Image 1 (tube, rainbow, N blue to C red):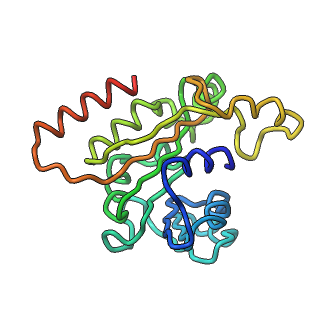
Image 2: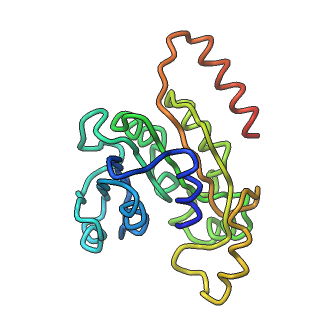
Length: 210
C-alpha cells in the first residue's frame, strides 16, 4: 500500500480535513493507511463479516452500485480490487462520482501482468480481471464524465500472498511498468457544457493512455 499511497499523494494533497470513502473496504488494509493522512475514512462493504475486522471505526454494510450516501458527501471516493468483481462496473463508477466532491481513485489488477493473467484463468472468482487493463478502467472513468488526471501501472507485490523474503527484490517494480500487477487511476470531477469538447477530450485522453 505504501508506494501506492505515495503516488496518490503526488496528485492529491491529503490532510486532516480530507474525507474519504473506501468502497469495498474488506478488512480495511487500505483504510488503515489512508487514516494516517486523512481526517475521516469511512468504509463500506457488501460482506457481513469483513467489517468486523475494519480498523477505522466508520464502516457500514452496503451495495457499491447503490451507495447509501448523499451526493458530494466525501472529498474522495476510492476503491481497490473491487470493480473486476462486480456485474456493472460502470454503475459503481457512476456512484463513486456521485458521492465524491472532487476525486475518484481506482486501483485494479492488470490483466497484462503474467501472474494476474494466470490468476484470472485459474480462479473462477477472479475471471473478471481478464478484462481489467489500464485502458478499460480509463474508459470507465471517461464514460462516467470524469477527467483522468494521473495513472500508472505498477508493482509486483501481491497483497497477502507475497513471501516476505522476496520483498526487497520486488520493491524495484514499485514504479511505472506496463507489466505491473496493478493499475492506479486518479480522476477528477469536471463540468463541461459542450458535448463536442467533451468527446474530443476523451479521444485525446484515450490516445494518451494507449
